[in-house]
Length: 97
Image (tube, rainbow, N blue to C red):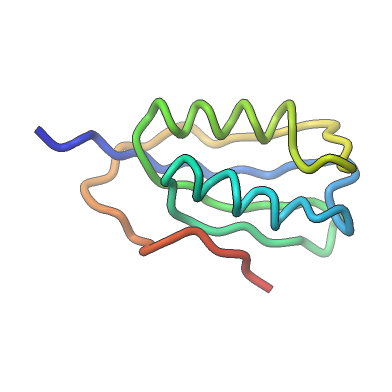
């Protein structure tokens, strides 16, 4: 049976711009075989969307909340409710400009 897929939106607050946060997020998402995207916002946050199996998403949420890039400082991480999806809508994880 195929793994059930979920999607979740996120926004990370703190010192997350200019500290390679998106690059590390992309690296971590790829390591967990997640798909989606992340981008800087004009408000100084990083937001994005993730798709994948629930256990991988939970691991990524923990990483976004507690680890981030080496020189980042995470003040707050906000996640939407995990929603089940039938199929991936993204082919990979990427950084949006």
